[in-house]
Length: 152
Image (tube, rainbow, N blue to C red; front, side, top):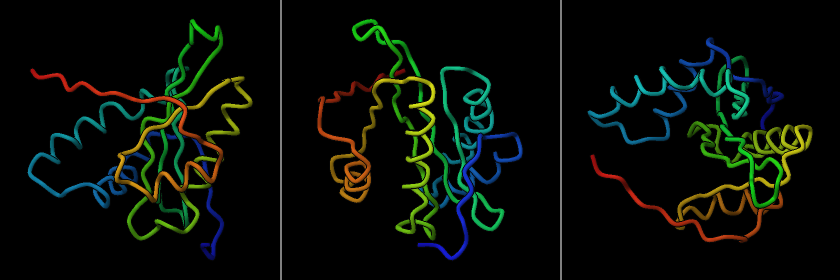
C-alpha cells in the first residue's frame, strides 16, 4: 500500500494532462500517440459533463496516478440503469499499490448511490492481474463479450 492517502475525485479540466501522462505510461509509445492524445483531450471532459458517464481520477501527492470511466445506460431488459467500466488505467509506477482498487471501490459506491443495478467490465483474456483485481471486488464471469472491429 502507498504511504500517502489516495484521493479520488471527479474528472476536471485540470486533470487532462495527468490523465494523458497516465496513458502514456501504460500505452505503446508510437507515432500514432499524437493523434490519440488529441482524441483524449477532446473527449475526456465530455464524460464528466454527461449524466451517462462516471469519470474519476486518483491522485497521490497531488499527482494523477490513475483514472476510471464508467458508461451508464438504461437496460430495457432489466428496466433499470447499468454501468460498463470502459477504461481503468493506473500509471506504471503506481500499479499493485491499491490505486486500481480505490478507483473501482469509488465507482462501485457511486453506482450504488445512483441505483445502477449491474456493473460490467471487460479486460483482455491475457490480463490476469486485472482479472484478479475485478474478482477481488466481486466481479464474476457472467457474460461473454464479443467484439467486431469496424474498418473505415
